[in-house]
Image (cartoon, rainbow, N blue to C red):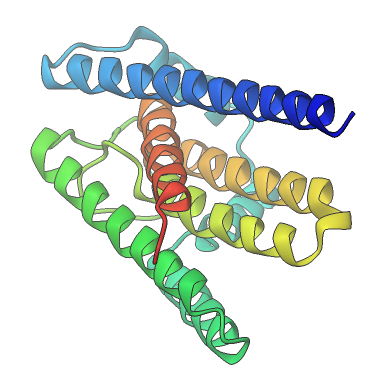
Length: 214
């Protein structure tokens, strides 16, 4: 009986690893395709249309909400959150998590900046924007940063409070999606910038979580 249970658990673990691998490769292929299209200066027909469709719902109330949401992914806020989590992890003597979190955040920032400079894609200019951004558009730094930072925090909290795991991941997902949508609403990114940012962020996050520290 113990051998049967052990074999069943091994099979389940193998299936989980297989699903993770398939998902990883699928996301990687999407990001690679988007990068190829951007490099070849191809125009995504839905990018402009979707932004204009979203903009038709703009009003002063939503402006305030979206400015608040997008601020949650701004560098100043992300740095504040990063330092707070590092201090908390250090106080709990979870040094491996602190190193992993630092690596995830700094690596995500570096990858994003290199890609922005490499592809040098201009930001959309479809209407007078509420905020000014001067860096390149692809991929979205807010999408990469929110995925890595808030995704990692959700991972840590889910381990700390396993009975609330589903709620933690649900809240983190809503926050990450909301930040990405705010960038579209404010007209500072195309949808493909956000998708690529999420893809890059989750690929790097998974990589960092899978790395073993001795």
